[in-house]
Length: 309
Image (tube, rainbow, N blue to C red; front, side):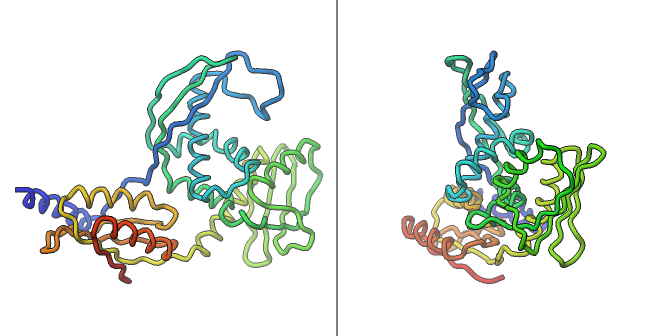
């Protein structure tokens, strides 16, 4: 009876693959985070921007904290604390877009305010894409230099530029090939980036941060797309005795976002050696993937193979 049920499940999976591609849910990771809100904000200079003043604002701050923690995990803790603080602030306006689901766990009284605890499921793939737009993977070791060509700027722009340099991992360098032109006129910020090849990347916005994000985000995203070395292979695993093992393994693969850029279940079969499954995976780090697979298989008496498509 079990084999009949599992064959039906496997058949459905195969039909999904044939009909339009097996669509896996976004890789998500749950974590409990906390955020405090103040009905009367403290005036002790601890905050570079106004702290949350309502429960809703605290929830969004908790989302940003969860996304920043996910970013730190994806870079193996490589983001310096100063940059991580700025990353949290950057994420707050759009933090909800990175959240798959959440549940509030409760509120506790605290000196001067209240603390909200939230269980947050974060979309890892979306976070990874945002990190690429911010240039974080590419600039963790060495910042990117640019030749500054500034127009007349408001005095308050210099502090903002300093923060943007840290967040994006860039720095002025008069000898750099990449040229950045920055102008402020008619209440609009205009930025163009030109490396001497192709058309400049141009952005315009009412806020410096928005124009900066559009220009640098476009450049870093394009560079990441061209530099990430990936290979698409077929991963086969066999030796399970129950369908639960295949399901658990599929869920685990979706969480390996540091070594896999895509996971798609192709089929599940009943064989003499047990239940087997095949996945098409896009590999970011083959050596690390093989190390994890070897450990996983050895602990469960499974066998696996990786074959080019």
